[in-house]
Amino acid sequence: MNKNKVYLEKIEANLAQHNAKLAGLKAKAAEMRADMKLEYMSQMETLEKNRAGFMVKYGELKKTNGQAWDDVKTGTEKAWNEMEDSIEKAIARFK
Image (cartoon, rainbow, N blue to C red):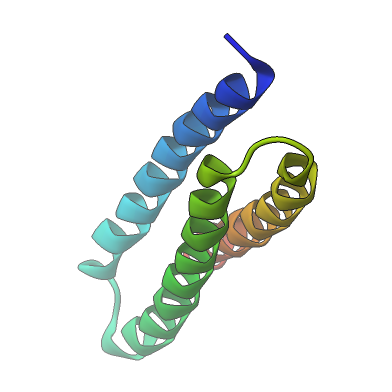
């Protein structure tokens, strides 16, 4: 198995964990007071935008090979880190 395929599989596994965290946050919404729900919904919108941005980069990475791989991989990793940071902040905020 080549290193690109292994890397993509690692992203898929991490994405599954991210999706589980996001689902957990959504489940907490049912328990929140009305004033907290507004803030929560704003945060969820940001998380969804970050995820959408990552998915675009990830889609590009899946289609890329050769010399461009490293450049696209760097952009994908940056998008992943932004997405992960935002969800970890949201989890900490709404504990």
